[in-house]
Image (cartoon, rainbow, N blue to C red; front, side):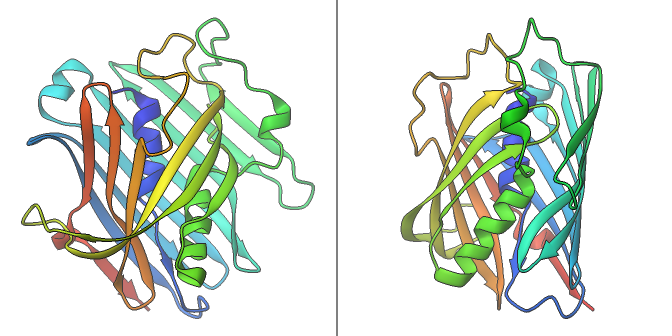
Length: 267
């Protein structure tokens, strides 16, 4: 599992939305445990702070156990954005990944006045290893975290998972599509996992630039249900992904919200 997989996982499961009008500050701390069968293979944590018209996020992810010995990966993300007429619009996104001691960094800014999107990267993209990043796909894009927030806002409004976004994280571009799969009751299959009613959400990510040219994980024709999220209203007005399932060539990888670690603070 490489950095692209963990970026997608973090984008999917470290997000939330409250139904009030952001009249007060809300802080949420989340922890997700990623498992392949009974093996713990990764962990992701995030802290979100929502105010009346702004939001911030600080998140980390890392491989665990036997996977760490095979592929040592650590990632970190910091996001800030504005809430404009109810929509989540990024202002800055910083991402850092260290995989087998190879470090990548990218800092992207969105100019809310003229729409310009600028990125500083270290190191520069190796055009012999990854597909080119085209400006026409970067223009009018948002980051994957804000895309998920906007989708959760739709769920809160209409009770269905719907959305299509052009996304960019400073290193990769993609088209992210969310589609509704109905309501499903989750059985609490781990002592710390969630159990109860959820909205089932299929996710399709179509890479358009920056991803590895030679990647054995990437299929030419991805099934639309390769990534499935389960969203639940864990408390009044608060919708959070409680489970993410990712189909891979070696089997299903499941990320579960660690319920005892969920902290919601309202000020």
